[in-house]
Length: 373
Image 1 (cartoon, rainbow, N blue to C red):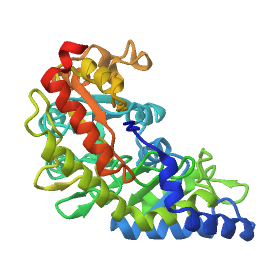
Image 2 (image 1 turned 180 degrees about the horizontal axis):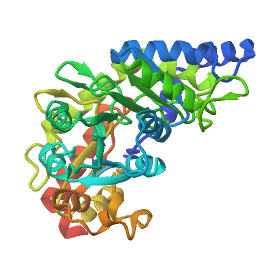
Image 3 (image 1 turned 30 degrees about the vertical axis):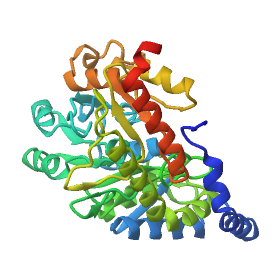
Image 4 (image 1 turned 45 degrees about the vertical axis):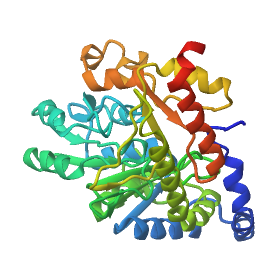
C-alpha cells in the first residue's frame, strides 16, 4: 500500500465546485489586485482569529518582515527567534537589518523555551518571534511575561497554526501581531502563495497596509519606501472558500493524530508529539522522534510510506548564516532534535486505512525493521 506524504489534489477535488464558483466570480469582476475579495477575506480571517484587523500580503515571509518594519524594528535591533524553525523566521529579521538571535526550544513542544528567551535578552532586544511549530502553539503566557518584563514586541509566526488555540484563544490573536502563510501545503493553503498579518493594533495594521503597496495610500504618492506584497483577488477568493472548511479539516487532522497516538504509544524508542493541556494543536505536521531516524525513514520508504524531515538544518547552521555570531552557538535541544525528528503523513484527506498502514509499518520496524536496514 502506498501512503503519500501529502496529496493536494484531494483537497481541490473536494471543493472543486466552490473553487470554480470563486474563480468565475473573480473573472467576471474584472478586478484582480486589492479588490473586494481581498477585503472580504481580511474581514473573515480577522473575525476567525478574533482580531480587529487583518492585512493580506504576498507571502508568510512578507507578513513577518512587514510586521517587524511596521514596528520600526531595523538596524541595531535584535530579535529573538527559535533555533529550530524554518529559515523564513530568521530571514524576515535579517531583511529589516536587525539581527536574529537564536534561543533554544523546549523538549516537549519544540517551541521557544521561555527561560532561554529570558537569557537571550540584551539592551538591544526589540522583539520576540515565537513560532507555533508544526501547529503546536508556543507557551504564549510565559513568553508574554518575558516580553512584558523587558518591554518587547511579540510577533507570532503562525504560518503552521491556522486554527490552533492556546488557553481558548486562536493563534493570530496571541501577540501584538501575527504572521500567517497561505503556501499551498498549509492548513489554510492557497492555490499559489500568500500571507497575512492579524492584529488588534490599528496603527500597526495601517503601517503594514502602507508598506505592502509601495508605501502608498494614494496612487503615485509614496510616504515611505514600501514593497509590492499584495495578495491577489483570485487567491483571496480561493482562501475564502477554504476558510469555511478549516475547522472541519482541522478536526480530521486531530482524529488522525489521535489514531497515531493510540496505536504508537508503546513503540520502543519512538517519541510522539504532545499538544499539552493548555493548547489545541492544528496538527499541521505530525512529527515523531526516533534515535534511528534515518533507518526508520528508509524502512518506511521501502514499505511505500512517504515521510519528510522538518527541518534537517537549523537556520544558524545554514550557509546563509555562516560566519554570523549565532552560527557558533550551541543549542542543546534543537541540535538534538534535528537528528531525531521525522514527519509522518498528515492531512485532512488521508484515510484511516493509510494511517493504519503507517502505524503497522512503524511497529514492524520496532519489532524487526532495524535488522533489515
